[in-house]
Length: 297
Image (cartoon, rainbow, N blue to C red):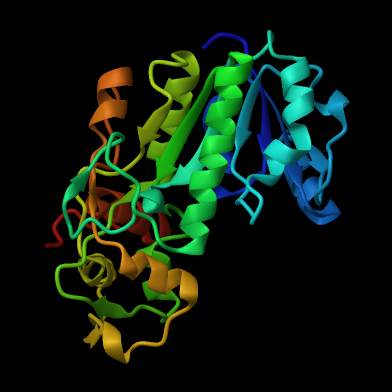
């Protein structure tokens, strides 16, 4: 990889996985957080932390930076990182090697289980997804005006160590919620990090990419498989009409689609380490239990 200095607006789960992947290649890393405790934790893994709780950033934060990852959620007026940093970014427009904005495949809305790709019309109806669409447009319009190498990555449900159906089953919180015909994509965080690293090496092949696994699947199947891997009882099916859920959870079940990852594979020659939830959950279970679950199911 060419020499990169990466600044992450929002150093969360995905940014952490990307940092773990690229730091050994000599990439210098910095990022924002909202608290001193989180800043200390970032420093312990070699990431230079900047405490940012909103408002304009200190432009000097970007002086030695040539790549950006934006993973903060949007608000009613768009992306807060865009509002805070657009001038500082534009003032340094000739230095940028890569800028990535992490969005969601929720922007597609409901397509009745049909396949969607990057050219599919956006049908989102939730306020949260509409805010994502507005934030995407902010960054893409900014890129066109300022000739910046910005790409939007539309992410599915993210899972990985500490954040998976395996962890949910072990915590005793697993529910097999059933809605007829419901299909989700998901993606292991390690594969997301690999895709972002590949995109850094080859910026601006496309301006929008779907990130997703190879097999969109019913959510109840994922919980069933995780339970079987761990030798735990499979929870009963619960009709969605009988389940209390948060507004965010309800929004996931409001959309039904299969997300194509063909573009990112063709652009970067990417092969997923965890092409379906089965490979991903098996690896997580083995890391936790130390057992080889290869004979299960």
